[in-house]
Length: 173
Ligand code: SF4
Image (cartoon, rainbow, N blue to C red; front, side, top):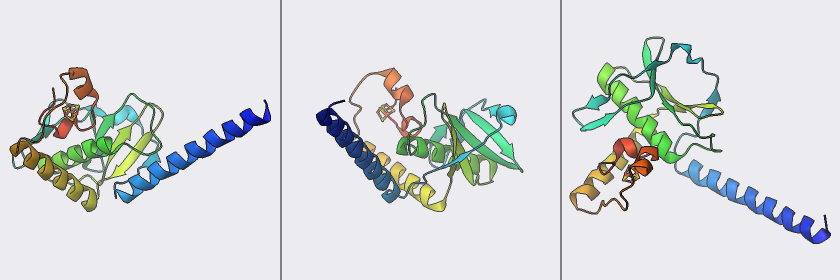
């Protein structure tokens, strides 16, 4: 490899590291839990049969699986993609919705939920801070919906089905 090509490659690598660090810092500053990689035995995972519903918030959602751990129900969301360096905020909020719905329907607060990607499973703590961020986001969505500011920009059902905000989006297809 010529010196010029080597220098160019090095520059790209440094730039990529810079972008990754900046994205990690932005996510850390968002206050969202970063998740811990955990081993999870899928044998006792049960498919959620029907959606969970909270009449107070008029919120519904269906986790992929529910798993009972020491008397508490833990929601699991499965993503077919490889895990990003840090979990996508949309995925974290989706899991937070399920944690909230589990708590409202069982009376027991799950301390965390599981995000299972193709290559690893992340444990996302369901903290009071995450719950508050979720409630703020829901209030913002509702307010934008009322004022007519919330307009879907496409008619692609498949896009909505892949979207991390699907469980809380009133415009989903
Ligand atoms: S679910 Fe909502 S936010 Fe997601 S793509 Fe569909 S309309 Fe957009």
